[in-house]
Amino acid sequence: MDRDWIATARTLSEALPYLQRYSGAVVVVKFGGNAMGDEEAMADFARDIVLMRQVGIFPVVVHGGGPMINEMLGKLGIESQWVRGKRVTDKATVEVVEMILSGLVNKRIVQAINDQGGRAVGISGKDDDLMVCEADDPELGFVGRPVEMNVQVIRDLYNAGMIPVIAPVATGMADNETFNVNGDTAAGAIAGALRADRLLLLTDVAGVKNKAGEVITQLTPEDVTALIEDGTIAGGMIPKVETALKAVDEGVRAVVIVDGRVANACLLELFTEHGAGSMIRS
Ligand code: X2W
Image 1 (cartoon, protein in one colour):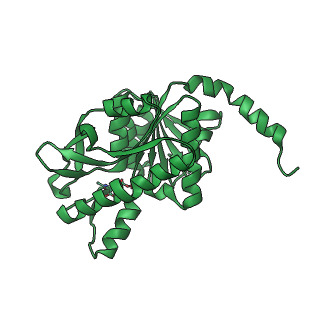
Image 2 (tube, protein in one colour):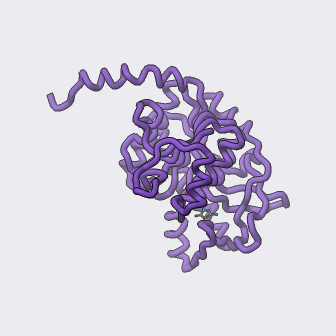
Image 3 (cartoon, helix red, strand yellow):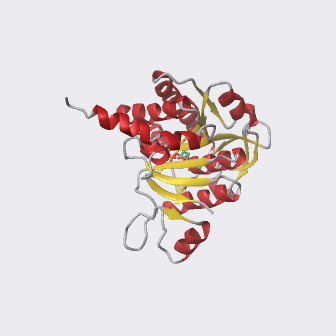
């Protein structure tokens, strides 16, 4: 026998208290472009999401797609500048961002989830005015900061048995405006407005590390603030932990920065005692 079926059955049995704890929970999962990887990684992610829905969790997927936007901009000969981790977005760029995120990337994820037997429906922040934005900073052009959230469309979808898959593209306050929203920012705003039980930020790093380079598995907002001030948390991790702090402040019960490179990272985090990254909660 090339597999230990008894261990498989035991694993399922040991998951019972976690399945009970999360039944009915709203779990927002940010799926970043760097975590998407190849077809197999996409199928694994999709299977985890469908399993979550199957056991009574309401998963809400918010995705990124930075590398895919870069690829298309490259083909078109458009270069991007980055300021504090956000893409400076002019009119031509925002059109490409919307095409790639709402089109290519969103539908690829929807298809992957449906291929695993889920009922994914892809929308963006524009649908039903889910996420209305203002310009984040004049220097960034059409980069949006969410100012009004209308999350009923998400509840309507998950209550009807569907899995919402959301592209971080938004409507502005004026007619016909389109904003590019950082994927983490969008996921945090959606989780906050839903008062989600969990926000899982899937990334390609192991989590928040201490000075010795070890992953810190549990942090309070105060711990995070202290680690930013003393320079232990730096670079690309800063926008992620800031998203986490804001989400916790808005009523998300816990935010977990999860290592998306680990197979079945979402299941590991939700259904085992090990977890798969750094949890931030009050
Ligand atoms: C991002 C949106 C996509 C994103 C961008 O243009 O790349 C801003 O920077 P990842 O894969 O999650 O990084 N928007 C304003 O966030 O993708």
